Image (cartoon, rainbow, N blue to C red):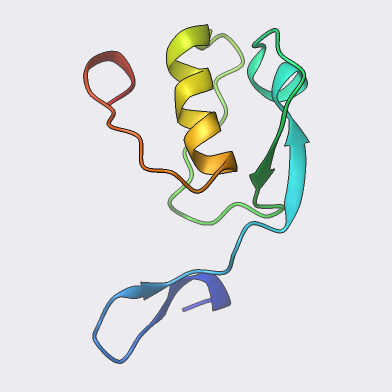
Length: 80
């Protein structure tokens, strides 16, 4: 197991915190001036990048705003 997939005493997965900030416009193609926390290194749970995927702007912005401000976001349907 690597550092990011260590197990806690209760059996849950222990993950490091995001360690970089990324620009939403550059990373997700959503036209907004915003930076969000991200991980600098992917692990085995991260799928391969699909260069042809187009993020839905409204849904993506809601999810990213939740991450950026440590708020819960209910996700269903297309992104869920």
